[in-house]
Image 1: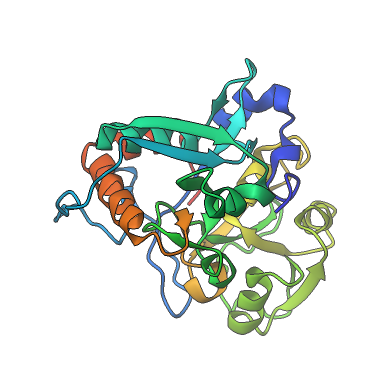
Image 2 (image 1 turned 90 degrees about the vertical axis):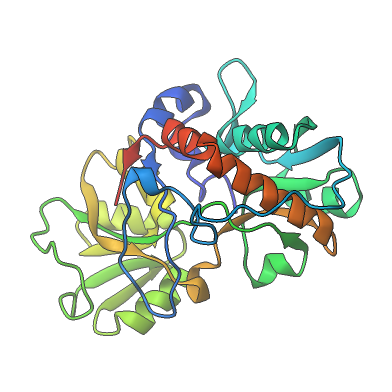
Length: 296
């Protein structure tokens, strides 16, 4: 994924601090075989793989005194350089919280997105925490911890569009923009077949068409759409409509921490530490710090 499609271009590096205040909350939700609109209260920001009732014991073969993380550096507010040139962001702070939970030394180093898995394979890093989706392609390259967040598919519309209730039966014949070859396109065509799917090469093209009034709706990743809605290029034209959609088949199983293929011991250590970070309340604090505005 490029920095453009991952929304960095919408907020120039000099505007990152202000961009953070406009970020919307990511939704950690239930995955289902069929589309489900679902939202949760701020106090329930926990992954559904752990609901806070049971904490696993510390792994017996815990042998780490240091964890070496790699991350990307151009995807605010998850990981980026601030105005003073310091690597920061939600993923960076979560990595630090994991190290604190394990009482180990923490090393977090930025690398190019294309080199994340190579660093794991070459033994130059223990784990990659860079908003990497757990999907069929990434699972051929690495093993993953339990997911630590997931992002929904969302519809957006111009504010002057009077249709508020977005369901398969209410959008019949409506033009809905979507990016070609994505899970969002496949999801839209399967579950909203009566709508007219208008395919674009990029999310920027779809958003521009919606803003110009050439579409009734656009459908895509909730995080990217949030940046656009609150960014300067949208001119405040549009807003979210309908619910949040989660489907592992089309959108992947969420985002996890990657480790070298076959390193199941470290996977267990990371899963243990993620539960500890949740139980302490640190995860929720970080989440609300970086994503103070709810979009669902």
